[in-house]
Image (cartoon, rainbow, N blue to C red; front, side, top):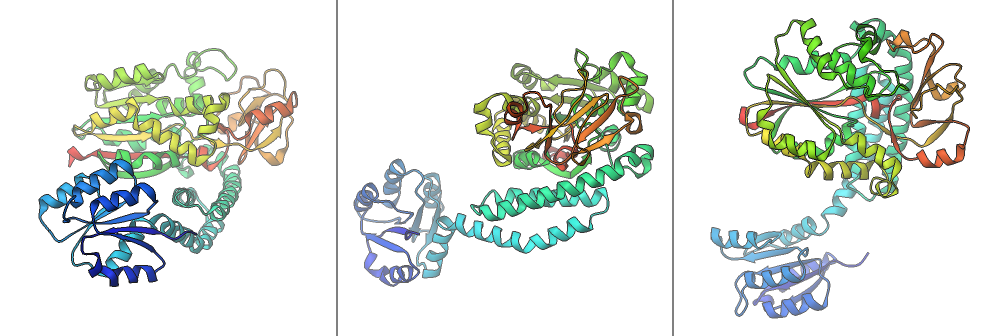
Length: 518
């Protein structure tokens, strides 16, 4: 590893020899000059990691030198060293993009810590994070072995995501690989948990965790009637790690009330889960109650065309006189128009469906350039944050924050990056989803699926009496034998949904209050 190189600019540099010797003994290379002009010459011919720059020098002042250096090396950290504590001097220096400032007389340890802070920070943070994860590895393993209920799985998943986000700040590929293995182990155990509990949850709602059909009742409707509007934003196909990637942007404008997870129903697909959210019903009950509003997977037409009507009927059944407005955004232009007219939304509850993440995952499957931009979870999160920070949705959220309001952000399901193909054989009417299949006489590997012979047992409608369901476990994806190798390569490493995994089923429901409301 090459030595860290420091340029020290001070017209009284001879008085600083003890400090220079101290830093040299710490392994740093020091180049010392006595004027701003000399400093500029050095910056033009050599690479430095950091500059200590005296504020008051004959000829070019420290601030004048700083401005010239920043034009030539805008990313080079410059620390202003000054005798003056005058506020205007500090304001000028900060406005000129110094990285830090020190007040003379400085001691050697101050200098040493400043170098570490601005030059070695990334390495030190990386080493510390890796060390902490090593210490926490055993505790996380014990959590996995001891988890017995849904609350336990929420805690495990949050901890895994916390470490995933922490380790992405490091270059320690070994630790990342270890966490990836822990995550895979967790998904295998989570699959067994769902396989053993899901049907009993459906039969006995008292034992069930919060699921799609109760989301509005438990998390959104109780916020109404408090004298301030409630905005309920559903971002289609939105994972918990994606929420954490945009959280800091939201919390510039809001105070966090609750960061929670709920359980998506199966299949973890929009036509099932989102209809369930807005009707307060399981899919089988929707199909029975509203046969004209339910389409089976392979039928043509929109499967989510009646969410507002389902919501209206839901509130009538609950006998809750809550007025609401409903907007579904599927295009950029529609998002921009809503952002321009957000103040015109009426009702105690303002519902906004924003469909971008789901579109992104489908486009990523079909376009090589998007695959390269979002090749893994870290890149997928980064792409999500980049989109969100420039989106009409963020503009809407910022505008809404200018008034007193509650903001609830949630989703209908998540997605998982699939890596393992699983062969399935079915008739021509078998559904095409890669993470779940519905059909007659399905042929599959029972070790790779959650098999439900009678879909009615988990409150899913049957298009035919003999049709059954299979849900992919962990990161498997279903492929037909025809053109097997082509489709394996085409879909491998893409983000899919519909099956059983933490990423698809443990999904965010975030409650915030605008800072204006305090």
